[in-house]
Image 1 (cartoon, helix red, strand yellow):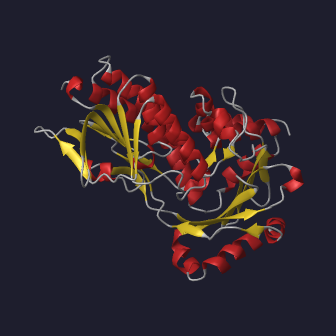
Image 2 (cartoon, one colour):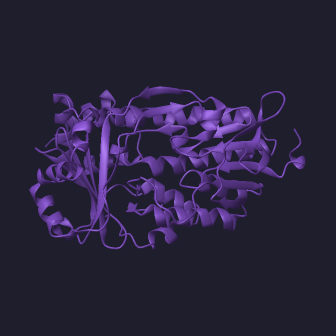
Image 3 (cartoon, one colour):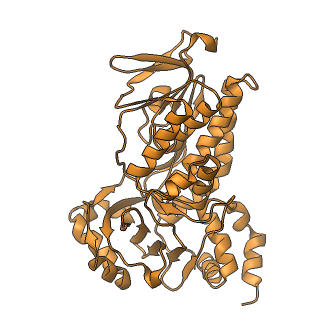
Length: 405
């Protein structure tokens, strides 16, 4: 395969939080990149849109931190996970000079990322629908096609979300998969007072409900309610009443919501399966939700998408420059992704079950909640900057539980 005979080195299908960073990084490395998205920007998409501190660290390394941090959403000074009898509350640890999470609306964030890809030299075509893949005689993916176009490249990257056309056309099967465990509904309120005047994320675990607040752009707060998937059909018979009933279980939150103004309709979905997909093959790769999807209970989708975009861009670059075989390099990205994120996928499925933690785990969380130092370490786990297996290892749990009160 001669790259010189191709119009592009890489085609990225999907221009949101996985696709645009992948395209930007490849274009900055000198590669010819085409990005295609059926949406136009700015536009919204279902998302809780939290950027944990590691996501902000990626943006800092990419030179985009200040643009995102200055886009109108407040920095989060505190993270609260309330289990009822106790609450884990503190400030997440800093990562590589980034110190705060932000919850930036996708109408704002995605446009910043799209423009960064353009400024890096990628060609971005908005409002373009990819309908299938092109293949060489040997079956290798060689490009994409739409109603009135065909484009070819050395590699096609599917960054086109949960229902990825690239994944479907490539026959990318799921593994480590667990069906959806929750249904989720959210809307936005303007003027929700911050508890104690401290802005931050709040998560309330209420048995068969979870209530989440993320302060975001324009003095609004994303207020999110989840229920077990088994209760989805009952919940949807009267979404507004059931949504407000869940909030009423946290009286101080309900009072703050009652004093605020709802500014958008309630949105919801039960389409939140948990899986990895086979994400590499001859001439193609998947990144973001197209290749790795999970319940939003840890709000880490964007953070994980940024990490995977960096891993994949590095792998593709090494293949396009001849440093490594391209297909082997992309397979190694998948191996690294799975090794890194399988513990997070498993923890997410456990939390999304909405079942009470077993007594030993409840005791562990209560002990963590009583220690500011352990709280910071635990929040590092939740935000993805600390190792889940190391934190929950018997040796570390023993250290936490045996520490003097």
